[in-house]
Amino acid sequence: MSAVLLDGKMLAARREEETLQRVNALKARGIEPGLAFILVGEDPASKVYVRSKNKACERCGIRSVTCHLPEDVTQEELERELKKLADDPSVHGMLLQLPIPRHLDEAAALACIPPEKDVDGFHPVNAGNLVNGIPGIRSCTPLGIMDLIALSGVKTEGKHAVVIGRSAIVGKPAALLLLEANCTVTICHSRTVDLAKYTREADILVSAVGKAGLITGDMVKPGAVVIDAGIARVDGKVVGDVDRQSVEPIAGFLSPVPGGCGPMTIAELMVNTLNIAEAKANV
Image (cartoon, one colour):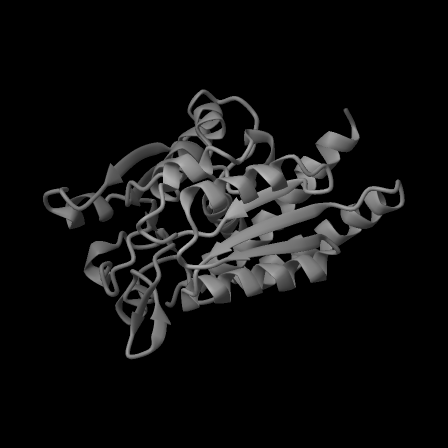
């Protein structure tokens, strides 16, 4: 029996439809949600991601602005543009598309984004709120992961969740959200000894590494919910961490790559932007 595929495209379309309805309600009050993207350089993948996010804004009725800066932009110039958007009342959310060129200080640049406009949930204030269980903006991909798990219908309480990857963008916040959902959480990483020992015990397995074929069928507990949040390229094709051919017959539920976490990440970005605009409107 094959795993049930968790259709991120379908769920993202549903989220966008709900978002559009709420955006229209705000517009009826004379408020137009605005989202700004800061793109530095000509990285092809980053340009594709920003273009996809702009299209999602169009579908959701959110006004988008893209500030495209040259590869050789100075730290001072980048921070000046970020602060200009931070001070713009028509911009409710803003994000710096990563990665940025190596000569730039990423942490200093991200610190220029006010926590209340940080739609990515990367600001230390928002990360700290998550750690402390305080309501606030959460990172988009981990939010999408939780929605895909909810789509499976599997109850999280008391389940053993294993997260592979400890990045501040996906791994750590995903683990914290799972902990918040009353899972028992294990975090594995590149220094974990005998990774399969842990993955075989997982009722919910989340892999966010970016290494093609990392998770094979013999590493998965029968019936487990497997969320593939990794992205890699093999022979020009986008693939995830999960070897779908061997895992699909074992798992109970599986989010595919592409078509799983990717669409959900963008949908959650739209929801975060809308939530910020609504909060500001209701002050």
